[in-house]
Amino acid sequence: MQLQIDKNRVASSFSKAAATYDGSSLLQRDVGEELLRIVSDQNTNNARGSVVDLGCGTGFFTAKLEAELKPKQLIGLDIAQGMLEYAKSLKAPHYQWLCADAEALPLAQNSVDLLYSSLAIQWCETPKALFYEIERVLTAGGLAFLSTLGPESLFELRGSWSLVDQQVHVNRFIGLDDLIKHLPSNLELVVTKQQKREIEYDKLNELTSDLKNIGAHNMNAGESKGLTGRLKVKQFKANYEQYRKSNGKLPATYEVYYLALKKL
Image 1 (cartoon, one colour):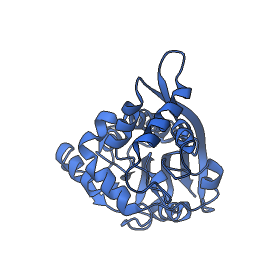
Image 2: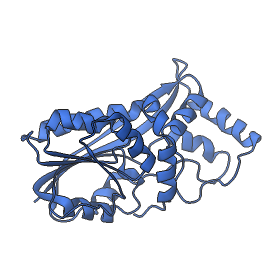
Image 3: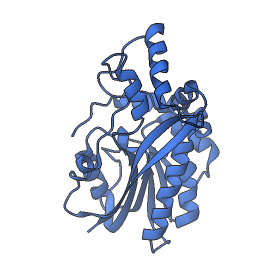
């Protein structure tokens, strides 16, 4: 399955959100920590030569990878130049920072021992191209640890808008089967894990503000153009109320996939 994603918009949106990202990235922190636990479980050799944080954002987990793995070379790579500039200003100067597309990595063949990517590859357009690049840059026996979002993510948001109009208001992500069917034969799937994560809000605008602050605007084709009318927004908010829980909170549910891959 191929998604129609405007990568220029992805880069621009996340660049603009660099300064507000860490303050609204509760889900990203939780998922990234879970992925790090999988790294610890699977990676028996902490003395890695070259480690890449693919989709490093503000560099929050780049620093954690250094502490966990103590690599000789650590590269933070992201498509959003604004994120990299922000990361450079806060993180250790000896890290290497690269602005690049995950589907066209500016890295040599067989040059990466471990690749970590948390909640970034859902912004890629073609899984086949992504996995080809991961396979190409990994050394023999090298490991890739990935987390990404599945199609049930933000189903409350999508369902609430679907009762208003038929335009695409919420990012769409592909399912696990559609994702892993694109793995090349010499990338072995050694770990796969699925989970649902729910974040609760008092008000709907807290959710929409969080999405704005992390730069996760709708990047898919068919999105609503221009301003959305007040009546539609009012209807959308009323529709979302059907999901309010007995504790008075509004949920936002995410479907998360974790993958560990080994190059044979």
